[in-house]
Image (cartoon, rainbow, N blue to C red):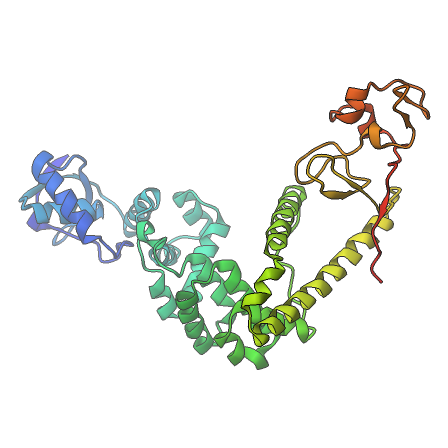
Length: 385
């Protein structure tokens, strides 16, 4: 390690990192005045002095602190090695912006193939391609991503937004208007993807879609017979999450159904709420028809027979083992037509079921797995046409 005069050291013009936070530099400079430079920078000798390979932030802070010398490790390195080491240091410390990483990778690929670049940086070839794809975006959008990692979360346009905008690379004007809409409407990545898809599926309505809300856009497409691609890729876990969300939203919607509100709505508002409710009812009926069809198409012994949860009063299909709201076991011997409560015995199987278990079965009770369970009270739900 050497103590080199600061005046003989200069930054690498190809340094991948372009943004330095002034406040953070000032804090580091104050620390250096107090404790000195704790970690030496790495430089390589050049004809006019020493070029920084790693540690430009420490070098800048040392200049701010008024140092005349700085600890440094001098290494003989080629341009390729210097760029790779500089990029690797910043990748590991996550100091680079997304675009800085992309530009640095692009420069590195001028000196080595993709496999060697990926190996040096410790990432996959697909990760390299994902960074390079961002450079296909217009410079204006690239500039929107030129925020350091610590501040990117505060900016409305993220890497995910930028990737969604790539689909419209042939329409620069629309991309810029969507950037403004992302900022004004605080669109999430998923919302932007849906809006971009809507523009692609109905380009003749683009002007309207750029002005109205996403909900209105999707309603126009639905009424026009244009089907959007499904955004979910269901697996067992995500389908279960969907069911939970469906139950929660159903409860929230039910809580909104208060006819007392009509006392405070004017004629036009009541017309709107009536139309919205009717549209929702049509969509829900179509969805229920689909679920009913799929249930009937499989050999589950499906009967559209409903029972009521003894605890919360929720109505469930007889095929459900537990209440979807409170978890109470629904297949109770006390409700079964085969159960004789006087003798506490199942008349079909012949075994005894004590009254306590018949009234409050556990999940491992016999009634839960009994294929002969027949509820005494059957509430038939009117099938939709």
